[in-house]
Length: 222
Image: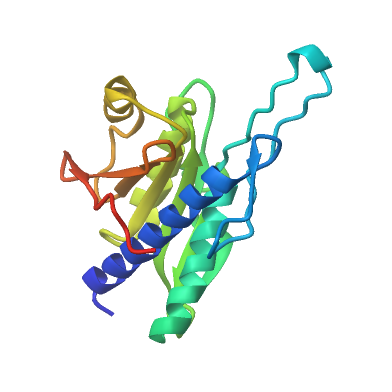
């Protein structure tokens, strides 16, 4: 299947998943806000962090925002769109890499030489009707150490087919300084990887491709 078709369909899945995750953020946060929303498309909940270390006077709920919620929302929408459109796709999670990698605290991550390193995993891979991997996806939430980004980008650039490696980043909030930091420090070596960042509080989605920013449609059909 043509790479552009696969890419456009992944973008459709992402757009639906982002819309769902926004609904979850507004309505399903444990101890922060919890209400049944009309027509809710997911039973996902953002759980709270432990409050055992705080006394009642200081008690303040704080939601845990992680890549796991986004991955589940993506899978839910992948299944829904495949059913609706008869797309012949399958998926695997924590999909083992073909290569082995060397990741250390002192050096930049790199593809291992013979007999070195350890195998890695992709958060999710999409497969065609014959079981072949056709898209590779890494999910990341919030701001992480630079090497965590570098490791995932290395895997995607090494193993994903051209233009079919996605790095999906979820932020609770962001400003211009945040994006400058991401562009300067976090995603310096995109190459053919498509970087997409979604911001929960603003419901905006940004992507980087060919060294420039694009704003994807902000208003979606529910």
